[in-house]
Image (cartoon, rainbow, N blue to C red; front, side, top):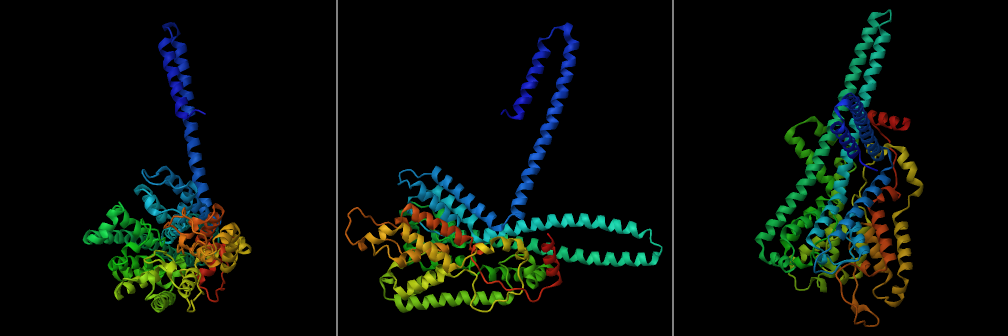
Length: 573
């Protein structure tokens, strides 16, 4: 099919040819033909413009319908699958020169792992080129929880603005009808009184809606600023550290990794809680660089487990500076923003205490069982303390490792597995669930998927069972590496989007194999393609578990009038 522009160009050439080749006796006929061609060109141009306008409106309408009226689970699933596939294409096209070329399946696995911020690895990171590392940076940015929630917040604001425009239009029409009907009323005094009361009521509703919309817009700007400031500031701080520390700089020079690439990669990976690093050994090369570990640790907390309390603290601080009523409204009514990561003050304190308690519990466990272990040998007490803190912070979501956790004792590994299983926003203290975000008020979303929801334990048990089936030959031939605990640990790590792995050791083979070569990637890198496909499914399920995993719901005992209006509106729609 020829494009419209080429058709118009051909018609113009025909017109020019006829005009130049006709004799003078046929000028009148040429003039008539020219007029008809002009009309034809005008008609075609008008139809093409109308067609383009209709296509644009159709695409726009389809996009908003997909985003606003489709199930959130389907929208996010399509989103993560799309960026994973795009990342795979980019990684495949940017194969490194002079380095081993990974298999296409492993590149796809790596792309999914980066997009779901899981950091499960089947390739060695140092085999990737600088361009491929930047592809992973983009994937981690797009797949991080803060970015996706920020994107959802902006889309919710766009939907609210669209509904507000339609509501204003219908409201103005209804008021005009009421005024025209009231004009025929005999009692002019009652009519004027009713009109004045209606105007006052309408102004109150308008003011309330205006405050809500401006509060949502301000919150979206705050989250965007929080996201950009965290990534940019962390990248700059890491770059400055490597400029000042020659020993750390030599590590990157020996690996032929650019300082800027490493800094941005580490900052994004830490904030998104992905856990990837450009080095094969994760952060083990910087075991003695305690300052670097202390710089990265706050970034990990700010991007996930402490994001909600820090976001509320940011709103409070900006409110003190600007003294606008919208900030106070956000803090007083966080449920009206529809943003799940903005808790109440009490819930923020509970989340902070839970995060701190779990970190201290892990640090105490490491001190008790691993202080004199092989993992911490040749370290002074301060390096051990910082390493234990860094490792404990990463267990919840991030997955970066400063020591080889496969050498840890069984109690420590069991505690790590339990902590990886816990969601990032969990609190062991009683959280107030009376006020739910307005985005959860739509009953159709709950009705659609509630029958398909399963518990987290059932999900992990199912995928572990499937993994044992696909890896049954390796379990029989290599029981020390392919033991049930290692498989369960790998599944839990993928489900929690953490990325910890117990690895694979050629020394544990029952029969020594000279062809076995040690590799720095995770245990899943030694699995079959079927087993890796199961882990890909686990990573997707773990990233979207808020829609799939069954959680206890608490009905709202006390609701505000505004919430009751919103609930009634959703039930009618």
